[in-house]
Image 1 (cartoon, rainbow, N blue to C red):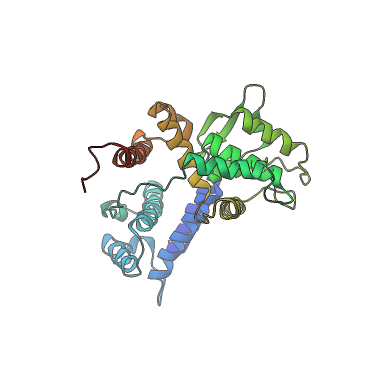
Image 2 (image 1 turned 90 degrees about the vertical axis):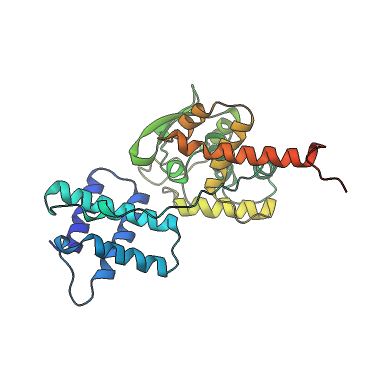
Length: 299
């Protein structure tokens, strides 16, 4: 079986599993890049791919200046492909299983403060920016910050996923795992205002719509967040995940239990949630350095 045929079969299987569009797009791009690297005069058979070839490809990625995080993501796609082929009997062994994943540096996410976040959302609610779909945009911000959703989870919401009586959202997370997430009174009010003027195209169940009345894309949400952040706070580096970080960090600072935050975020591992404790400790140290007399060096 040619490598291109194996990739096509694998992606078709992911579609049958109802894998998210975002994941499919990433896998398709990474696997196509992998195939192109080895397709010179002739395209290799999947049985020809061995650990040395994969290490050679990783070395090329390193020379191109890819970050360890990007290389880890690409290796994840390669491992998944050959794991599937091994289970199907198309290869005798999984060559990617023998490759060590490049270590990614531990980074603390940049988190907007409570004052900055509230100024941004209050600015939208107060009509400081005139746009055609301000009510929709306010609802997007209230859900992103009020519920801590990933952008893919936000754009995947349908009308049927909202329980207004109990104030719950049904959220489809990574791997199509579902969870219930509560939303507060401000988010409820913003949704009410938006839904009163929502104009969907025929048979569109998506909660958030674009100008054509069809489902809003994750790219569209990123553009919306960046526009308002730049206009109202002067920070054009903000993105939807910044509000997810803010949701978790501000809850933790207010005394919320780490395991409760894990459930709200939909993290499979508590270790993923624990990075927010690093952010809080960093903030605490900054406060200590500014305020405690023993922290300041004497002139």
